[in-house]
Amino acid sequence: MVEQNAELNAVFHALADPARRQILAALREGPKSVGELALPLDMSFAGASKHIGVLESARLVQRRKKGRTRICTLKPARLTKAEQWLKTYTEFWNERLDLLEEAIEEYGDE
Image (cartoon, rainbow, N blue to C red; front, side, top):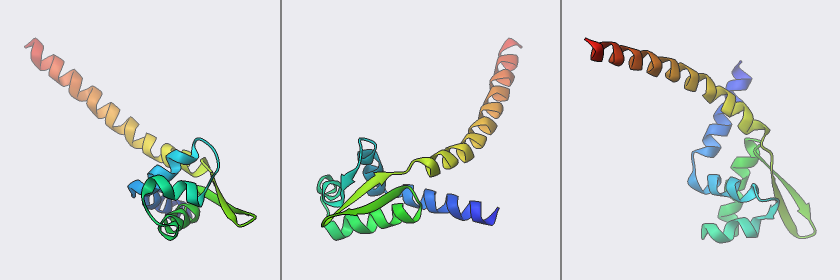
């Protein structure tokens, strides 16, 4: 359980930054070099590399060397685990909202 929490914490930490979310969005289109990922972020190669490092630590991205270039690839399996965790809360709130709707309808009939 503790390890699963650490994994989820790493994913949510990685997703907390808009630049990292933009990197993930770019990687949905396919593998890209660090330079290609840094350009639309208007940040240095080193800055983008630090963000990619956080994504790597969360195991959302894999970086490999191709010649002198570092190529990044999206690894979405961890996102699926985070989605599953969030889904439990979606179900919880949907049930509560359904009960609220029923109460409002019942009150409106009086």
